[in-house]
Amino acid sequence: MTAATPPRPDQPAVHSVDEFVFSVPDLAEARRFYTHFGLDVREEAGALALYTHGHPHRWARILAGPSKRLLWLSLGIHAEDAPRFAQRAAALGVPAAAPPPGADGDGLWLRGADGLPVQLRVAGKCSPSQPAPREWPPAPGHGGRAPSRSQAPATRPLYLSHILLFSADVDAARAFYEGVLGLQLSDRSGSDIAFLHSPHGSDHHLIALARSGGPGLHHSSWCVPSLDAVGIGAQQMAQAGYTRGWGLGRHVLGSNYFRYVRDPWGSYAEYSYDIDYVAAGQAWPAADHPPEDALYVWGPELPPDFIANHELNAH
Image 1: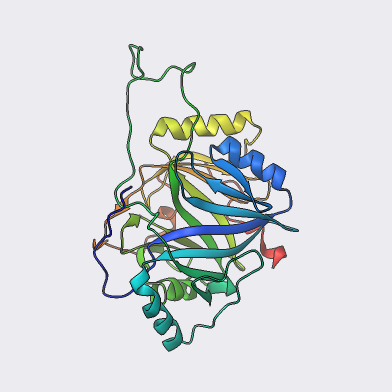
Image 2: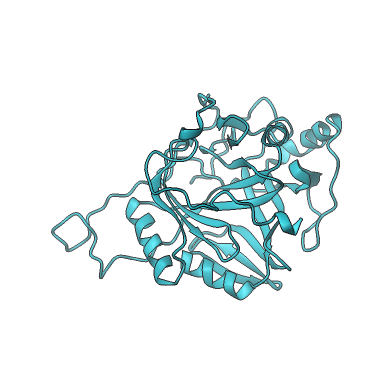
């Protein structure tokens, strides 16, 4: 990633998922899951904060609650766009939202798609400004090209690539994220799933939307630098007891290799390698794809409840 400011789009647009916040009923189990996943999990003000090792940005927070539930999104914007967003929201009649308990009141709070509170706040760009790294290094001191199992490092993700949100109406949610927040369509499959990127430069999708009976967080996706890191991550999670999930496989839309690991509450954390990148100002050839292309090129069959929204009973 770089700190360079990309060219300005004609309309204001969010540049990053600055933070996503959700609740779970067991913070100790959440700490265990995300620590084994390879994140830097810290306690902050009674909540868990998710960082990637060696990176200063806080990507997510986990609060204690009666159930697993997506609470709000904080999206990063450039300072010069703040008044333009306020004007656009007012012109389009987007209702304001009160900051949820545990959130700060900074920036502009809107009632987003499916009633989800969305905060627009001035922040540095934390979405990638260049394609993700692709490493194929030989192991030092080893004659073959495969890493030695005895010396293979644990997988530690580099940064948050994207999140996938459930929505009762993907087309209506797109109207909010595109028309109000300035994201742009990368690809979709009818009204079942849509992938949106930032015109400031981001991975193929910064936010994805999947049809369900209501809102929720399906998965967070974390960039790793090699296919070996995906496999080693899957192995380290299985050794920790987290054997349920999907993959290894490769997506069609976004092109990335993946392993999804199911958390104790029915959602997923994804190891992602080699996802497509949409540069700032690039005209991406968005298309409507058949359902068989919406998920994967190759990989195991989907788990029966992979697209189940376990948050529905929490709303």
